[in-house]
Amino acid sequence: MKKLTFTLLITLAAACLFSVPCNAKGKAKHVVFIGLDGWGAYSVPKAEIPHIKQLMANGSYTLEKRTVLPSSSAVNWASMFMGAGPELHGYTQWGSKTPELPSRVLNQHGIFPTIFQLLCDARPEAEIGCLYEWDGIKYLTDTLSLSHHAQAPDYNKHPEALCGMAEKYIKEKHPTLLAVCFDNPDHGDIEKGHGGKTMQEMQTPFIISGKNIKKGGEFHESMMQYDVASTIAHIFGLKQPQVWIGRPMLQVFK
Image (cartoon, rainbow, N blue to C red):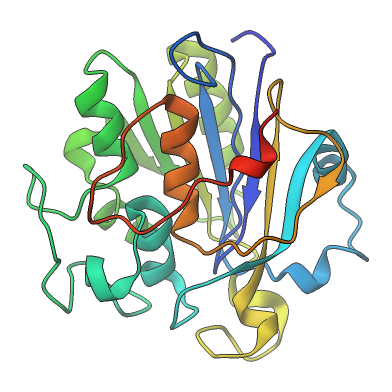
């Protein structure tokens, strides 16, 4: 893969990272989205994370992206993938595998529209993957729109397994879109789990870096979890569904 990349780091109950090379039709040829479950933005300034801080320096970021409520896992992963909140996609709990509320719209696979499905429909030839540690991720991605998905072994026994899987997949398949979803640092590091209404649980980082991204810029415009899917759709030049309420973060692009 050529080194023309966007790197996007977001947190919900997750943080996310995108890597993308340029394309004439959109702003990128490849996107790598990296999510870290439960990473609170409050920890970033004093954390020893040189690689992530280098991405921040080379791109754009906010430490004020907010989760949807509750600030727990499935409902927020779903919102990032589905461009809408729980009121529309219907996933409302930490471990939702199916919607507790009827999804406002269903796609051809019987699930609320996802960024993976949008890309698959627009580019059937695209390689689209999702790699994860927590098995709850697979229920939220629309696996029928994925070329490949796989769960890494237990993090506590194999802490580098997911990284190795992602590296191998990228080198072999050159995916157009890859989501890499880490289950750590789960619980927001506040000693009481996550899912509540404190700003430690609800305020999360978003970092994006790459060739067509403004450098060294912290932005303070409002950003919500579901804006992640819309930003990816914008990168690929995709029209988002009417039911999505997310907005692309246009201010990060040159």
